[in-house]
Length: 235
Image (cartoon, rainbow, N blue to C red):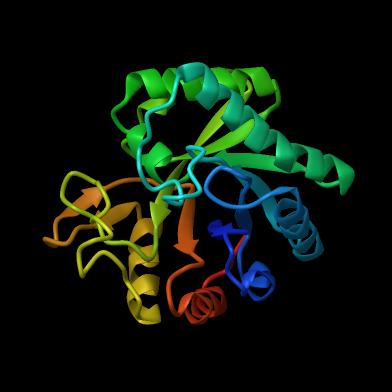
């Protein structure tokens, strides 16, 4: 059994086809993409397919799709993150379905691997939500140091991205950043299931994972996701 998550409601046209083949979805909620309408549609897809629902908040930066760290005050960032997450919570309540998790997007997700101040801001947002919640984080995330009985951290691996020896993801600007052959993605996921990351330099690093991400914006994402779901038991 393995939890496969996917970032959705980001403007792609395959969400409805992807949903039956994953177990968790991370819904863009107005920071890097989306609005109440797109959130509502994604929640309804997830409910229909019994997929765990999560919010995918980011820096409020449509222009750069949330993939750059921006200059923003702590309070404005907190307000934006709370508003984004609340979009998904409200839609879940409206559709009578559980709100399961939060996964930060893009530059926000990556920055929390070493930015203590940003981790504190994000943790304060989680506390103010005041719900039992799962938070998806990278193995390097400093957010894990912030403890609360209401918060459970799931370590996330990436099935379709390559890794460097320091456990960072290969930059998207590099030619070998993405795995696009379904067989290669499956092999990486199987290694991660055995608590191992194999880096670009063939270094094997022991690491446990609770959930593994497949991206929906890879050119052949649907082919990859269908292949994975046909070869693994998704929970």
